[in-house]
Image 1 (tube, helix red, strand yellow):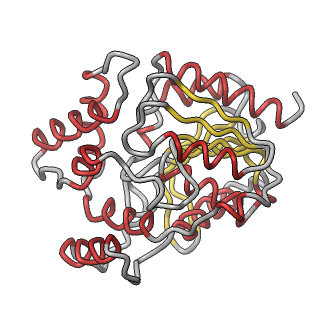
Image 2 (cartoon, rainbow, N blue to C red; image 1 turned 30 degrees about the vertical axis):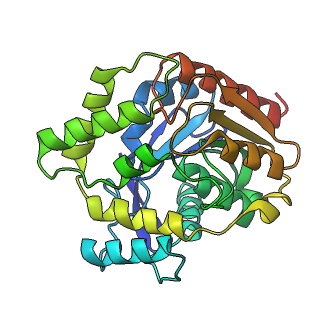
Length: 298
């Protein structure tokens, strides 16, 4: 892995495949480090002829931590935002999109295919809106148009997401494994070993709940993008599970409706599942690959 200077911060990143191949930038979701994009998934995309880049968003993993607010201050801002009040937050989804553009600059990549999951989809959409000349194609997974009030999580999923994770390793692993199971979806058996290993690796690599909370403030204050997405001329694929308790299917539908000419893929029985090489994500890999090749005229 390596570090890039981007937008005034350091971004930890890792690549798969040849730098001479078309670039694919993978953007992770809330609190998810780059290892959330399973290595075998990235490797298979590289085998399909793409230069795959995964990275830690700011405030998570090994990228720059944007300290300055205590957890108590973050919590106060969070609940003020829930009440409809305006709050100053440390950074925005637009800032995180600029981080991604800066990473492409650092790697001397003029244009890239971009795939974002959950919060990463918000960032990818914003990158497409603010920097359309950098986009070969857009894939938005488990995301919505930025209208937080219209596309709220189910109560059980929201409560679990907001519950503080234990600070000790075993408690954290158990907490995250149960959360992954809750949002997984009912279409496939939950792979407990994979998710325990991911939680353990994430804890050992960087346990930093303050960064996750600040990222959530960015989500809560993101712009509504329905109108600006309507101006996009970027080839776009929207993917959503029909059993997603964190971002309802209607959020994916709204995204697909907002982007002219976009394709919409609904995955039966899938919730807010992590990218691993199970049947769902094997099919998604094929859909993303086909979309990128079609966008490039292959």
